[in-house]
Image 1: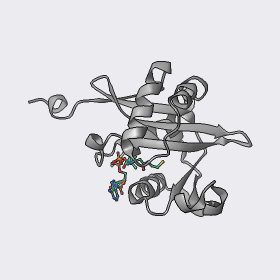
Image 2 (image 1 turned 90 degrees about the vertical axis):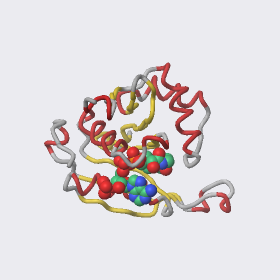
Image 3 (image 1 turned 135 degrees about the horizontal axis):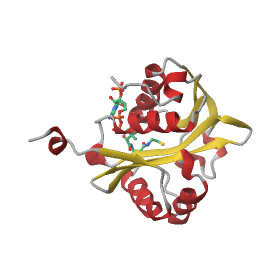
Image 4 (image 1 turned 180 degrees about the vertical axis):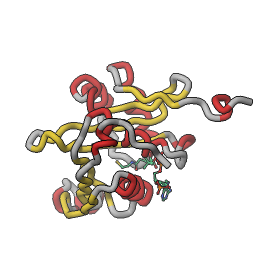
Length: 176
Ligand SMILES: CC(C)(COP(=O)(O)OP(=O)(O)OC[C@H]1O[C@@H](n2cnc3c(N)ncnc32)[C@H](O)[C@@H]1OP(=O)(O)O)[C@@H](O)C(=O)NCCC(=O)NCCS
């Protein structure tokens, strides 16, 4: 059995309109993300195509990352959502999506918000920062009381990772 048969290749590409529904499905199945309307994912593929990626295995979308340039700091890529289908988790796919997106966009800084009790996501971004030798700072951003019904929401902490190294921005960083 060839290496490819054992582990099918992952294709990373910027999403098109037809991917919106699959991104919505991956988000829904994650049972973890705040699920936006399908319309929001479709709109995203149109207006934030260049700062988002889907991961495909055998032509099936198995993960996505949605990002945008912060309007007031346009070298900072804000990651809104990232998710991987359960069957593909723990294989480094989310880390590879972040590397790929940061490399393709030439981002200088990367930000996201994460709740404290999401160990996978916290580890994903900590590991990204370590891998690229960047500073990783965590500060308060959206507190429970900012949400419409504070009992249903957890505080979202702001993670900022900067500066990203030239080699990553040139798309040449190797993952261990
Ligand atoms: C968070 C998520 C995207 C990670 O995807 P993934 O492809 O499994 O992540 P990776 O395999 O690239 O692992 C990234 C890091 O997290 C670690 N990790 C993975 N699963 C973990 C778990 N259950 N607990 C603790 N750490 C974990 C990995 O070991 C790796 O760290 P390392 O580089 O130091 O080894 C995935 O768990 C997911 O879709 N969760 C639901 C949606 C979500 O919570 N998204 C984030 C909020 S926006």
